[in-house]
Length: 117
Image (cartoon, rainbow, N blue to C red; front, side):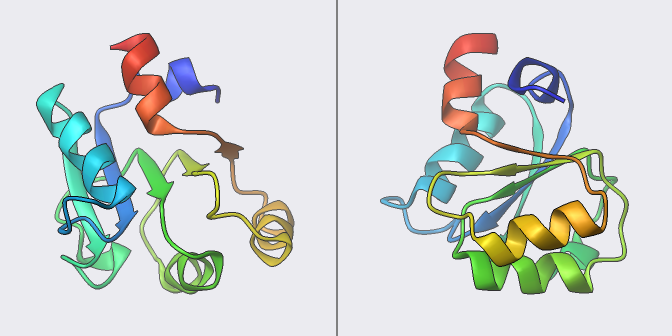
């Protein structure tokens, strides 16, 4: 998937601090909500992807790579693609995603919101 295709999805999960207004995860979550997307926050709100009460299309990693990897590894829900925000990547995370053949892109949903919504 590319960023344009990702922005055509409906159900997003933002992993990171989605309650502090100064954090990018909060800005991303609020931006998605303002555009009518269905969004849940994991990390500060829900503790696990498995707690998300709807089907997930896109997971947005806006958290340190080690914690993001841990949350992904414990996840049992299906999804279409992961967006790795700048600064949320690591060699270990990328290797794990490639090994598991999980679809991902490195990009920014704030850019997606400004370009495609």
